[in-house]
Amino acid sequence: MADSTAFYFEKETDVFEFVVKKGHGVKGLADTGLTTIPPRYVHPPSERIDRKDTIDSTPFLSAPIDIAALLEEAGDDVDNDEKSEICKKLCEAAEKLGCFLVMNHGVSHEVMENAKRAAHIFFNLPPERKLSYSKENSPCPTHVFSATGFTPQTGKSLEWKDYLSMLYVNDDQVRKFWPEECRDAAVAYLKSANKMILAISRALLKGLGVEIDESMIRSYTDARTVNMNFYPPCPNPDLTVGVGRHSDLAALTILLQDDIGGLFVKAQDKGWIEIPPVEDAHVINVGDTLEILSNGRYKSVEHRVLASNTRARVSVPIFVTPNRPTTIGPIPGLAEKDGETVYRQLLFGEYMDNYFKHDHQGKTTLDFARA
Ligand SMILES: O=C(O)CCC(=O)C(=O)O
Image (cartoon, rainbow, N blue to C red):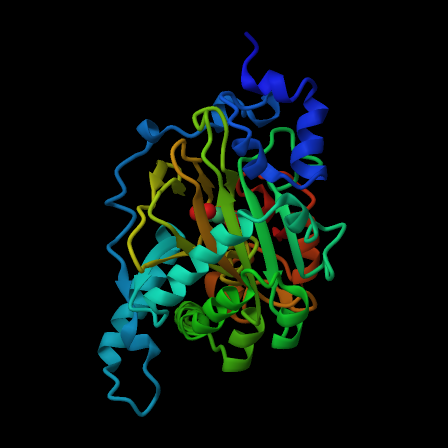
């Protein structure tokens, strides 16, 4: 008897048509009850993820860093020694792994839960509704769109993930262009994360040891995109990937993951470690932009996601970036201090355009910015 994949899709192009063009996404594919993933989702063995291959995380990943003291306003009863101790921990983690967990970050449990719930709500909408946010149909496709995989048009193997991406410009645009089913939760989350974002960005940029003022810090971290990622249950998670290995474009990614697990990061050249879900903690990833700004001192973290075969996983990353016309490159004075220039000066918009031209291929995206 033919298996359910063969029953629903006689040709590979039918899968692409159903998932991408008709807007069913991988969610729709999983809902057909298929028992074997279609060949387009099978990744080469070297790219597959196996929990058994991970290494001990202890030398690379510390317990969540409590950043409460960094959020205090000047005039509060500030303990400067405590603050500098936290900054030191953040900088060390950004240098060593490019990924760390933070707690007591000022975003409430309720806001975080609402954001994750909103992701489930959006991806459980009928395909026609989700398709109305595809790049072809969205009322503002440059800022808000729903898609599947990373580069489904060019990618050789497809990824087991659907996502919605929303660039924040102002509240008026949120009301006009973001899907009403999830916009309130998304924007509440984004706004309540602002203080944490600025505090972490300030700590890391000041930790470079060169003069940097508040306006520079803001210009490197001014734009915010919130994504909602949805990984439906997958019959063969061992053959495919939720997300292939890549580093993020952003300066920083603030990642909210649910309790399912499956996020793996590369620990230098030693191997992969899993970042465990910790309730109410955020995962912070250093992205390529911060690696460039820091002249290579902070490492953007290569990461990937394993799909689950039991439950749908969601994650809600906030990508913190400069705006397109901002010049990025080692912060003034840094290359002189370091005695070498690792990255050149370029517009963030140029870096971004190049980044999205390629499939996920580890950290090769940074080559574009090398001096
Ligand atoms: O879902 C995750 O944990 C990571 C998502 C991710 O890597 C991305 O959206 O770029």
